[in-house]
Image (cartoon, rainbow, N blue to C red; front, side):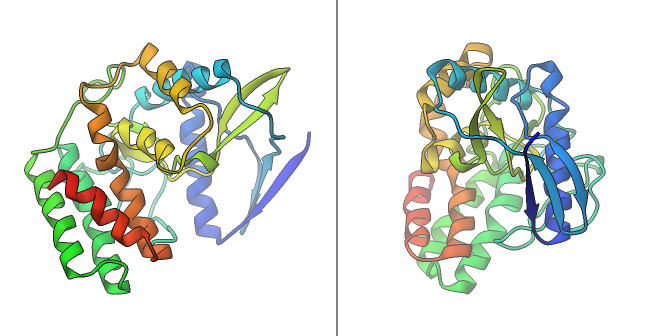
Length: 266
């Protein structure tokens, strides 16, 4: 078996590994495939090497169905970490505000969680860095106010129901590896920032920078877990957290783009 050794800050790899294990728990219930951890050490992690393959429509639809079941595996609360995780959650955009897996949930509604954990902290960092100006920050804060007030709340997909979804949490297209196993092409999840959240956030992340065969992925997802009405109009809303994180990390056009998307939801 060919392996890939990943190196990074020890705390970063420990959080990634906790997320991989949590996502893997859903695989036996039909969840999306997840890269296998072979060994770990201080600052390194050996993963199964995934040779690239050309995605097919069938593989993409299967990934969508699997992702729907991963989301439906659920989480104890919005904003919770993977099981066993304690302490700060490291990210390139700064510490990620999450609470412990079994901690009492501070939020009962998605809008509150999204505003207070996934938007406001990064708006402040983007403003401090100069990636957004005062006017842009005010636009983003107005969206956060609407979220906190419940104005933008909406249902989870059908299989998730009333609770929190089990999210990959960083599901841009580069974190799906198309590979071949036993002669069959499949999409495998890598490099998560797993937490409890709204399933549409993972799907919106796939759309942000593009992923192969996205329409087929979405069709497979909807086949087993239909999305709530109006989901297309909410894609930008769910992309705001990834956009503002990119504004913090990279600056440049990401700040204005974040504000432009936010204006749709003021």
